[in-house]
Image (cartoon, rainbow, N blue to C red; front, side):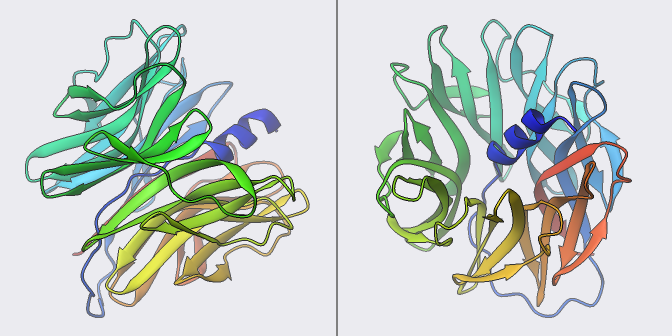
Length: 340
C-alpha cells in the first residue's frame, strides 16, 4: 500500500459545500446517488464520477487527475477537480463527463476543490500558483477572482452562496479563513491551537457554519472542529487526531462528517448536532467525506480499508454498501442526491 498517498488523500480531501436544505418528508423511492472522487490504478490517480455505483473515469490515468466537488443544474452533472500533463496541474470542470474549457491555462499549478451552482451559473473554488505561492481563487463561469494577495500559500477548499455573496473557506498561511466576497475573517481557535484549516462551509439563514480542524499544541494532534459564526467547537477530544471534512445543515440539524483516531487507525464518523456516531469499527481505517439527507435517511460517502486497499462506501443510516471492488484504492470526496 502506498502509505504516503493514502495519508495525503485523507488529509487533503476537500469537499463541496451547499446552503442549508429544508426539512424533507419521508422518501420511499431511493434517490439517484452521484459521487465524485478518484481511484489509484497505478502511481497516479484517475478522476472519477459514479451514479448509483456505476463508475465513469474522467481522466485517462496516464497522469494525475482528481475530482473533488460535484453539483447539478437540472439533469446535468458538473464535477470539479484537476488534471496533469506530467509537469503541472490544471483546474478543470467536467459537464456530464466531458471536460469543459479549463479554469486555468496550465502555465502554473492550479487545482479546484469545490463547486456550487446557482441557476445557470457555475462557481468553483481552489487555487492557482503565481510562481512563488499558491493564490486562493474563486471562479464564476470560468472567470477568476483572487481572494489572497499571493504573499503566502493560500487555498480555497470550500464554497457557498447567499444571494450575490460568495463565501469561501480555506487557509492562508497557517490560519484557516472564511472569506465573504474576498474579505477574510479568522475562525476562532480552540484547544490551544495556532493552526486551522476550514474544509467546508454551509449557510443557514444568517448563520455561517464551517468544518475542518485545529492543531492542538498540547496534545500534538489535529482536532476535528465545527464553527458556527466563527465560534469553535471541538468534535474530538485530542486523544487522537481528527478532521472534519464536510458540514451540511438540513432544517435545524447540523451534520458533520470526517474521522477520529484510535492509535494509528482512523474511524469514520458522522456528528449530528455535535453527537458522534461511528461508521467503522476500528478494525481498519476509515474516513467519511460527504453527507446528505433525504427525508429521514442520512447518506454518508467515504472509504474504509480492508487492510490492503481503501474501498469506496455509502452508508445509509449507518449501513454500508461498497461500490468499489478492493483491487485499488478509491476515495469518494463529494456527493449529491437526486430524488426520483
